[in-house]
Amino acid sequence: MQALVSSAEPSRPIRFERDYPDPRPRAGEVMIRVHLAGICATDLEIARGYMQFAGVPGHEFVGTVTAGDPHWIGRRVVAEINCVCLECDLCRRGLTNHCRRRTVLGIAGRDGAFAEYLTVPARNCHVVPDTVTDQQAVFVEQLAAAVHVLDAAPLEPGARVAVLGSGRLGLLVVQVLAVQDCRLEVLGRNPRTLDFCARRGVRTSYVDEVVPAGEHDVVVDCTGCPDGLRLALQLCRPQGTIVLKSTYVEPAALDLAPLVVNEVRVVGNRCGPFAAALQLLSEHRVEVDELVSAVYPLYRGVEALEAAARPENIKVLLQPGLK
Image (cartoon, rainbow, N blue to C red; front, side, top):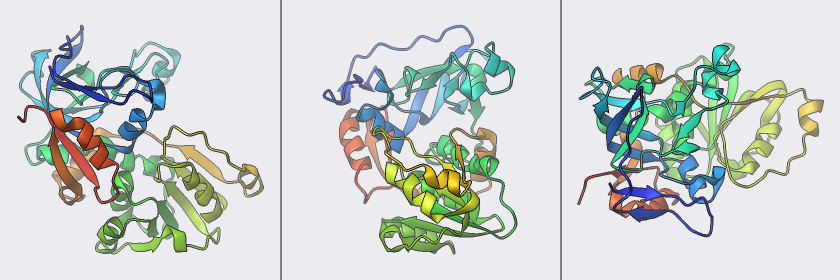
């Protein structure tokens, strides 16, 4: 099958292969034909060596089940990315996303969605409602991660909240928070994405023009760079909460004294509830179609990754099967 493949070596970038081995579902797994896959910041970091991942990257996708459990064959699905054992101590405690033996689709130990086919455990699958298009369904994984912010930092009425970064994830986080009873603002660098937020009634600021005053109850870092946490510390009030969504290759050199002095709570925040994300999309409460900048055939995947890294593009999708 056709696939984009990472070698896990920064000196050897992701490449396109026409004859990558077809996946074979194991017991309890299904095989899925990928309709569309989305490129996110984590995929760009993997291309730079994040997680030293070797194989097919990509974890945001929608497709049709073609083999495995007969109950799933023919169904259009999205799938949770953590493939877990259900037996280790963390799984038994309900912390399955942190399973000690987990593989993560397109990120750690398991081939992902930048290919014609992939395999996942059947229990990871969620049926996509007919009211949700393929293009919208690609956003489920990232939208679920945005919804999970509210689990990490439940908001008091009228809370002052800042979202750092108006990129792919930031725009979804902003839409999830905009319907909450809070005073929300987003700080970014991209005029196009800041305008997207402003048109939805969200206060916007250019990050380079902000003078931090340490007055936000909650700060959500979606910047994808080490400087994001540094600015978040300056924006957050004493005993406030920082929700950290960013992952990146470079180690962060950071003065942690303000965490102690101001008693700031920093919460790492990753995967979220797919069911809630699908419901938001099916009820058209989140706008994602406007975020799609381009759709590339899989064989132009290297070009698509380059396009996804350019600031004028928001979301770039890959479509296997296009000639």
